[in-house]
Image 1 (cartoon, rainbow, N blue to C red):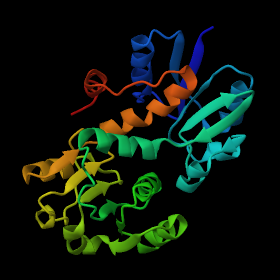
Image 2 (spheres, one colour):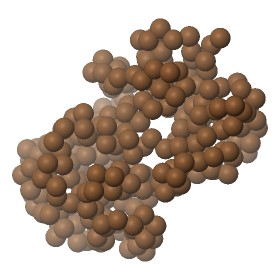
Image 3 (spheres, one colour):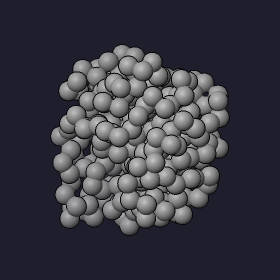
Length: 275
């Protein structure tokens, strides 16, 4: 019997997840499928009826459904509740369980690219306090890394720091050049970097020579932030690896095999991106 999984979103045609999971299905010789399904918000309850009926083993959830599925899941793990978003669903005995693998994707990407990335145990400078930042902050807290949270709107950053707790120092975007010299890691969790946008007032020359700069944006693969950091001789990690590594736990749950993120897989996804 074919095991079926999916990614839902609205729109969904842009998703690289079918290519990622399809590669692993072939690699492991599994009788399974993984498809992208466009589900409008109003149709989510009906789709969950299909899940409970046993049509799928589970699947991924992307924009705009990561928050909406909370109310529809039969259970959501505590970490997903803390992050405030579900990106992975598993169906067991007619019940739908939701969890979040974005924080694992973030850590897995850095661990694979720069294994000693936290050797200096310096604070992480995290730019942005939106939905994506929540998973990053949870990931850093799991490694006991203090955070300097930089955001244009102080009230938003205040609310996020209050909700998550941990060692978080707040900093306005206009103060970034004062805070940056303390950082061992810089993480952009905003959409700045897409369509050629950049941080005009961030002076990367103030960063320590051993600082690592990473971006969750992966289209383009090298954002202006990463390009500028590379020119200054800093270590950089692009956001594509986060997408690849966050996919691993779900595949293992649905298909019973834990896949590997290989250079060949990365190359196949990279070939689909607009550089």
